[in-house]
Image (cartoon, rainbow, N blue to C red; front, side):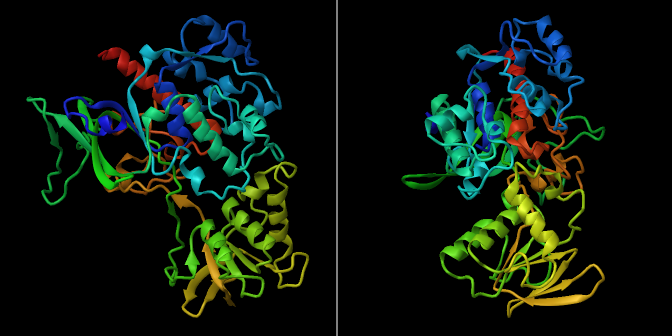
Length: 496
């Protein structure tokens, strides 16, 4: 079935290709497979304004309603109105400590299904495969579930439990793979694929495809040139998605045409670098998995020089916890003040996240050389790294500009990550809110319509999940609702 998709005749493109098979892509596939959400009869939403709106057209599915109207006035922990709407329908009063059931019921309507293909580098689950399986989620475990399959029920069947209401990354990956199988979505997924190019094509008068090229003949632009007034390009066009697929017989190229392409590749592909001298040296790494690998291979141990961990986010905290558990000495350098309100540790409830609270305490109390309350750990707040040297030294500047130098065994720069959009022209920058800066989930996401998630610059191209600024599984599902609603409306306008 999947190979038929890849070998399709160019005269019959797929309606939708989704690039990325994490929770965003999985949720969208569920909706596009003819699973349509309706408001349950006799259900009462705790928000009286939303309840009155839902009562106006109870027979109309949520994807067929005006999500702009339904989401108006809702408040929540996301900047996306549709994300807040869908989350409010799925978890009506969860932010207030309630446990009200979802007001949604799901009807399988095969005639509403939109043919689609979901491409992913790994098995379903996306970036969750790259997280060490024993790591606990930042969000509550039940916020990681996908529509119409309760995560806590799956956990109880597996005889697993939550810790402080949180689950492990390993549990999450297994649940997502089970979800794809249980919901009959496997036929839509093609794993072990690497997308190398997305090109915009248009139909000429003879209904054949042709590439769009820039005025500079030395450089081919894969997207149509944007009109000078900034309005979207002509919607009567197609996309060509090229890449490599790994099968039992080896790696082979593929090419598929699509009327719409959804970008859902997340933001964890390319770790951020400091950009300092010596950062490319072999003892300097940019992933948590490299620390785990070094420990497994006995490259570092309790008698080694300290490992340097750079960063003040949760990945850096996970690295500190791992090293501390293994009795590996740590130097921890970060640019912010310990009491900076923007520091993630200052935003987490202590009772839910005791291990991160412990790291925060270490950061505050151990800013002097050992011994101390946390032996084997040294905190260096408001320190900037100047360079690494070949003889495994790291040079810093403190907040007063004074230079310091420490011997280290290895360095782990864990300061965030960026999406890899090398398969798009100009690495996707032309699609961002600020077209002069790289795409970033937190600072410069892809510019999309807030109610359809369609690119404001390129019709037929959608972005969801972290690429559109939704960084939590709980809220990426609203993006899936917005995209599915838009694509279903398009399908109704253009029936087969």
